[in-house]
Image 1 (cartoon, one colour):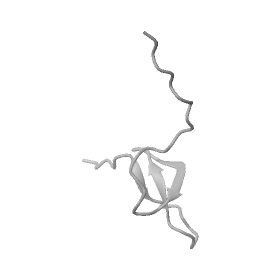
Image 2 (tube, rainbow, N blue to C red; image 1 turned 60 degrees about the vertical axis):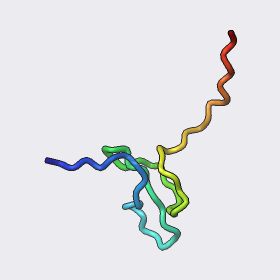
Image 3 (cartoon, helix red, strand yellow; image 1 turned 180 degrees about the vertical axis):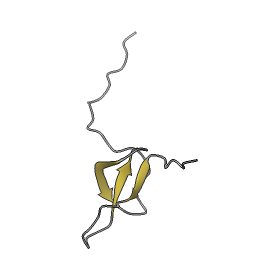
Amino acid sequence: MTQVTPPGWYPDPGQTNDGPATERWWDGKAWTDRVRPAGPAAAWGPPAHPAAGPVPPEQP
C-alpha cells in the first residue's frame, strides 16, 4: 500500500542555492510553485490567495 503525504509546507526539495532555507507547498499530489521562507514561526496552512475584498454584511 502506498503512503500518501498530506498537503502542507515541506522543505523545498528543489532548493539549490546556499541562501535562506525555503519551504514549498505540496498539494497532496505534486509540488506547486508556491514557496515561503522556512522557519519555526511559519504557521501551517494552504498558500495565501489574493483577497477578493471584504464580504459585505447581509441585509435583513
